[in-house]
Image (cartoon, rainbow, N blue to C red; front, side, top):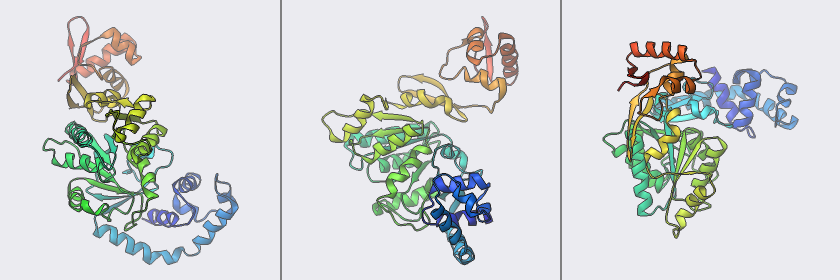
Length: 381
């Protein structure tokens, strides 16, 4: 708890953003140790000038005055069912932790279970979608959630709202939907989404890097887009003009080495100029259905595996927890439902044939694979 207290204090120091705070913690081990650092040690950190180091040290003098503020803040979070998750916490989303500038603190409203975010895909788009855009947002959100993949979006008017609602309405959903806010998670913005907000508090998650009760600010929304893409294995862009906010999310996804998908639109439609440009410039893969998305991310899914792909029909099955040679062998079966010959398994896994056969035998005893005539193997359904 003291670590969280020190970290929250650091976030309130002017001029200290996520990157600088992370560098301080990397150098000193934790937020508490920063308070015992010397001026010289702080000033040696990249992008922290001597002037900034002075400002940081001077702010520490008022740390004791932070006690009542902190206690009141924690009580407010508990009352509103808001979980505060620092970057150092084991429950911090693993995918988000890998980006260049992850938020040092996340505020999450709802019943937070880290595993619910480990297989996520973002859906973003214009605030003024056409009927076609609405339909595509609903269709991809419904298909993803049916497959057990969490849908991440930004709770904005338009495509975001249609995506969130589609997951909540989906009776076959095996996943939740999560919204990333550009304000405090206790602030309903846009206000017309009040009913959606309340439903997501019960069935989904609301996420923000901004403090509780922080007001919506125009500069916050482009910044929050890196969290949408950072939480996602890939981001689907559905209708956006060239200068649309959804394209900012696409660019951050590319910077984070995540997949970018775009739903093609009418060439005469302004809200399709951005999505079509992403495809034309080779920055996004054209997607027509869930199969197109899963082809790119199926080997990154945890606990889920593509078992069949036939036209527009996709089914997902659970993947056993494996490690070592068994995981190497199992991964050779990804993206195929056809039996694989032992020679191909050996080549794809990097194991020699003898080790491959021993591993397959062990997996056969566990009921994971089955052997067919001709030294061919397949995953047992």
